[in-house]
Length: 322
Image 1 (tube, one colour):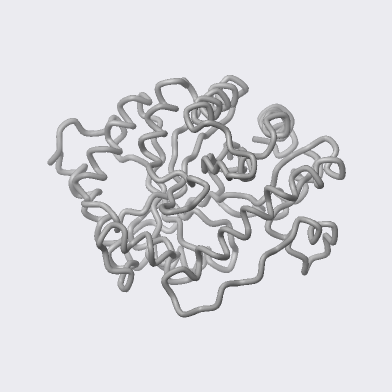
Image 2 (cartoon, helix red, strand yellow):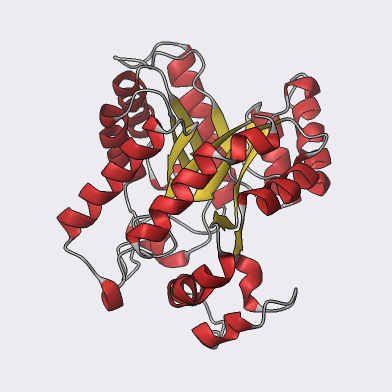
């Protein structure tokens, strides 16, 4: 299993930097991570977030591909139900070509009503459309129906699904599961069998709620405001367009209580040694390919980002035997 980083490009108003500078700095971090031996650079998708959450992951993925040489270039995740399959297949193929065959295409159904409305697409039935569109992308590439096609045959695809239903969908499609969970893994293997695929072809990866620091206690108060912003925006976004009430805001001070029931459970700041111990326990017996870490939490200070990248790439691999 390799280690990599997820970039979501959040740039909140409280500590906003000019957008061009923000993207330029992220690409510099991509280059640095690649030079330090990162196994993957991953980009995610959301729309209509006030902090500019990355809306077009393949566009940024292409830029990162052109600036790097070794790391896999992935999405975790892109929303295929918002796109025509031919458009997605063409755009992803270009990223694979630019990267020299390094694309890892992670796909999911999403959870936000406004995003589907923005693209004039029905939210209801999104899982079925997601599966249909993934199958069509696979067909277009397999039959050479589009020009140019990707270098890889096939491009590694991943299902970013968290529930039992989604795990079965990933299995039926014969793709990887972007979720490390022993409970869901059995549903995933069942889906592989249902889809006529070899269950031994199972592979899993995941975004881990961790960043690394040599001094987690010192890092916590610095990260807390950024984590509070991240969590509050997720919580508000999850109910937009629904009749559910807006969740109460989490205050950074709440992260001082780091018990198992406190809000800090959304993130762990760990030394490389402590992270390795938890990772080895979590992944034991599972066919893990990629471990993905947050590059930054909501635009946190650059020195914390740089330390995180250095520790994940230079210390963690030896500790987990990758």
